[in-house]
Amino acid sequence: MNLLALRAGGRRISQIAQWISVGMFIGMFVLFVVSVIQRYVLVRPVNWVDESILILFLWSTFLTEALVLREREQVTFDVIWDLAGPGLRRAIGLLAAALVAVIFTLAAPTIVDYVTFLWREKTNALEWRLDWVYSCFIIYWLAVIVRAIDKLALLGSSGWREHVKDLAPDAKANVLG
Image (cartoon, rainbow, N blue to C red; front, side, top):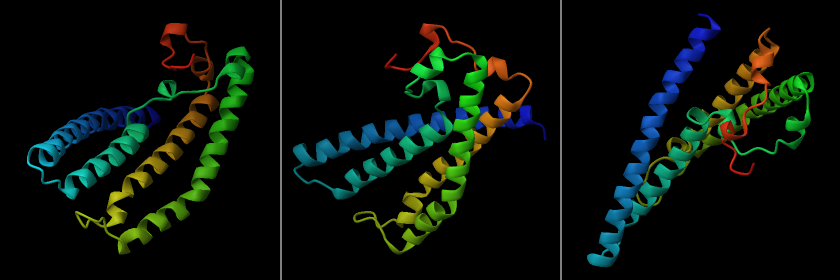
C-alpha cells in the first residue's frame, strides 16, 4: 500500500470522525436540554445526564483533535516561521515533527498502561469502566504520532517546498494572527 492510498484513507477516516463529532455535539445539546427540563421543570435532577454530557464532551474533544482538525487549523505561535525562508522552515518542521514523534512514542506505553489500569474504576452515575471512557486519549495519542511521522515523510520528500510555502493571510485559520 502506498503513501497516497494511506493519506486517502486518512481523509476518509477524518470525514467519518467529523460526522461522529457532529453527532456527539448534537447529543450533548439534547442531553443538556433534558438536564434543564429535569432540573428546573420537573425538579428532579438526574446525575447520569451530566455524566453523559461530560463523557461526550471528552470524546468529541479528543476525537476531533485527533482525526478532524488539520495542522493549519491549530492555534500556533508562528512569528519565527513567518520570518524564516523555505530551508529554515523545513529544518524547523523536521526538528519539531521528530521531537513530537520521539517524545510521544516514548510516552505511549505509559499512557496505554495508565488508561488500561483504569479498568478498576467506574464512573459515578453510569458505572462505566474508566478505561473505556478514557480510551479516546489513546486514539488521540496515536494520531499525534502518526501525524508527526507523516510530516517527517512530507518534509523529507522531494516536494517539501510545497509544505513550507507562505499561506495567504486569509488562508490562515489561526485566530490569533
